[in-house]
Image (cartoon, rainbow, N blue to C red; front, side, top):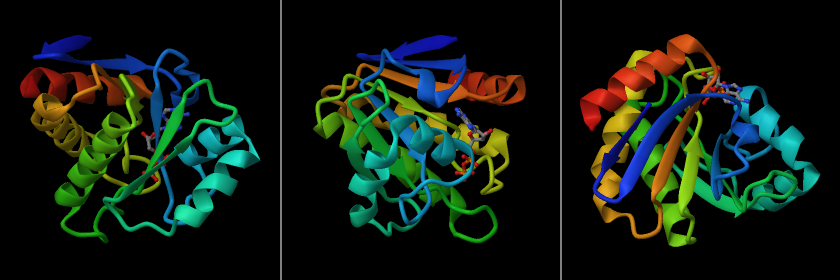
Length: 176
Ligand code: ADP
């Protein structure tokens, strides 16, 4: 499913974040130390190789809502944006911190000249953010940022399961 707002197209697809060879930047659901971990961070660091952690680690630790950018190393993407989502029920206010992840990630990608960015559903795995709620924050934030983007023309949400895909499609049709 895809929708266009001004110059920016947003789409939701089922897939793996490490398998998005046609986008300039992929976003990592990072940990504070910017190293390998479980879920998305595990998959991204495995696919990128040890050079990614070597470049990223000195940029950390980061706090919830913050993001940093590195090269893609062994991934088929020019950039990896590492964003730290809030732990649900712990890092508050959750919605503001999650929105900051999306906003800061989009700004970094845009400032570095990326024309396309792929996001996973940040915070909805190990960090426990309910996916319906997180999807509303994610798509609402992208809709709010779309006008200010100079380079980014495509934002893709890459979801790992049907339920997550449906939640993001609902949020996309509400936000756009
Ligand atoms: P967080 O620690 O921010 O909660 P996780 O990596 O645990 O992040 O999970 C975030 C979401 O990404 C979850 O919905 C999870 O199912 C999904 N996910 C895990 N691996 C991948 C992958 N390789 N590609 C896309 N999504 C993934």
